[in-house]
Amino acid sequence: MSTGSIRAPPASHADASHLAEIYVITPAIEATAGGAASHLSRGGMTTKVDAGKIATQAGTAMIIAKGIDSHPLYALANRVRHTLFHPAQSRAQARKRWIMGTLAVSSALQVDAGAARALQIGKSLLLGVTRVTGEFGRGDAVDVLNPDGNEIARGLTGLDSEEARLVMDKRSDGVLELLSAGNRAALIHSNNLVLVGTKEDSHEPS
Image (cartoon, rainbow, N blue to C red; front, side, top):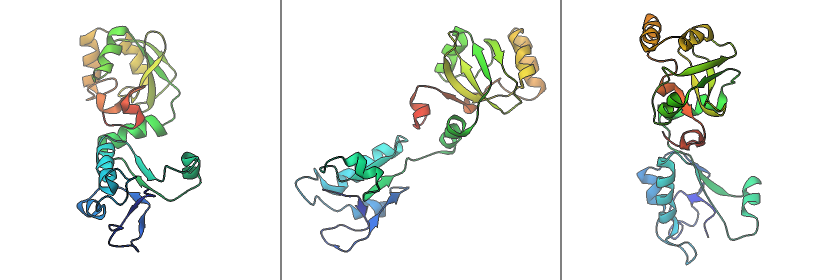
């Protein structure tokens, strides 16, 4: 049973060193997999590396470790030998993970049902703000709440809180005029917005 990936097929290289982390599955990594080594491996390291490609390309990390002993997760927590495959990450994914996971948020924009639906299908936030809570500047992170007050997204604002309050009282042409005056395309552009409770905020690509 595998305890992680190594630098060469174990059948022909018994002294091959262990790979603790893999950031990119290269042809060289695939070549180290070799064939099945035991009846428990269900295809051996080749199958595991193939699974790693599927997982990491979907933006998910994967660990290869020994799973037949008792309490394998406890063993992992105590640094038992394993290999961590890091998720593939585009610049856009990295930016959205940064927005979701590292920025402090103390303000919020509440939107109507129409704006909430638009955000769920990947649109930018332009119209439909019904309430602005807190004070923030352009580029600050804010929560986006649905009509029930539940967080549905988080994003970086293109307006400050004073301007956002002006947006609440304007029709579409007035909003566009306010945005265009500062060369901004939206109150929160879709590139700067992460949906909550979806694959996007669980570190998968959007």
